[in-house]
Figure 1: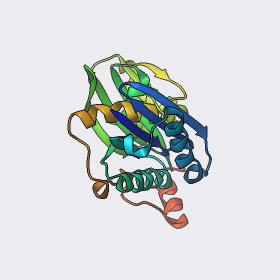
Figure 2: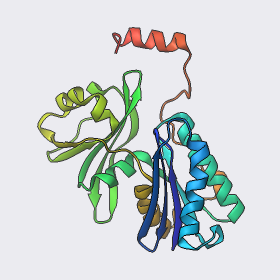
Figure 3: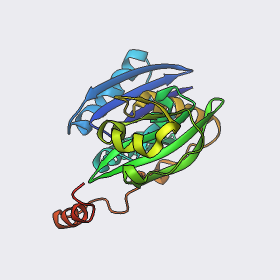
Figure 4: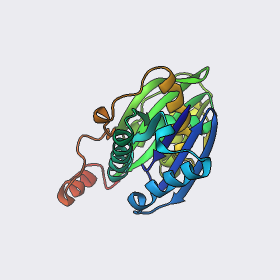
Length: 233
């Protein structure tokens, strides 16, 4: 099976080509250049593998949560390519991709959502899949959902920005924190291959970003009021 994957949910832009378990990748710190970089990255992977888009069975994308603009780009590119090729898409949670990247068995995946909040989810590995203990949601670091037991691994940008609050919140349940991890197309491809084999691919028209936050954008006044209500966090 050949599967293309992309993730543009953070400042990093990444692409991957899954070929029967072998994965080739591209990644760049994109800043705001995701829309300029992602398609050339995908094209380069196909050229190097000596295959065409018509040889791909599905396109996977990091559906979010993450940067609102970034997840829209990923969804739009995946939809456009899949529609042109007549193939399905596989949305993958960026937090699940973080869990996959951790190589741990019990994972608290959290990304900085700014304005004092985090995107958060918890996963437990069951064979080659993940059971979601807490679905992706938005919360403050000091109010993150509790977990049962010990031996949990923390990963994602929220642990870089809010590590003290998250360590205080989880106490002895948190065994270690893996710094510097971010969602990557490599893990999006790995999870998408499992989902595709399980029949969970969808039509391109049905794909949508996973924003989590109710409002895609806030005005300056709304941000100021929220910061004031949160004590300037």
